[in-house]
Length: 269
Image (tube, helix red, strand yellow):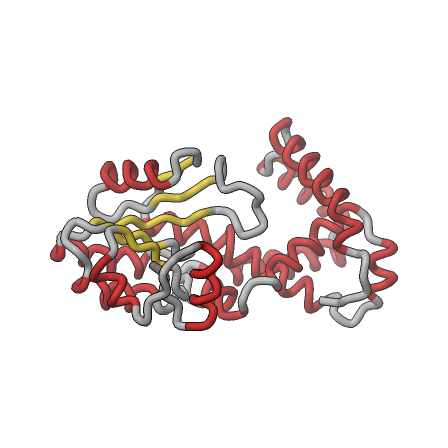
């Protein structure tokens, strides 16, 4: 069973996977034993509250929103309807070849042990990390909100450059950064805006980044002798040991393989 507000899209996907398209999510809620909810971040709490009263006794409602504080509050209303809530955040995108082995975050709602058991049955070959909603959103401010903001600023900064020459001159570091910017720009603008604006911790994180950018510029301009000390301090706190080097080698290897594909045409950001 499948429902999407874009009816034609839902029909196409349903035909591809042999599913039955429905005209409303309420219809599905009345019949389904398990519902996977994938809706815009802003709409998720409202959708949860609207379908719970229609769900079957003992059924499961699993949602995958990228932010959790407001979502968890909505899911807690499941207890009044004898519906089992599950809140996960898959930490991978559509580009992965296999979901097996990928990391999935589980945010407890009512009964953490039951929710983990359900999630393991749904995704038996994945790694699970359990964090509370507040910690999840706090860390997503760095992992998602800040990363998206930085890459948008990077893309905007190079927007007027000669991309044909830029591609010819690019080394590994720029290739990595360019690919990251491309991946952010490939997301829907609605999702990116929500990840930045809907996370209550994002504003402080982005302001800290802007302050540190200004500080770095001042150090480079007025105190170049302090730049070495700044770098040493960062090297001491960041992971530059074997694990960090291994990850960087794998990343650069993947980017080398992708470089020709990424830069083979003259399209711009």
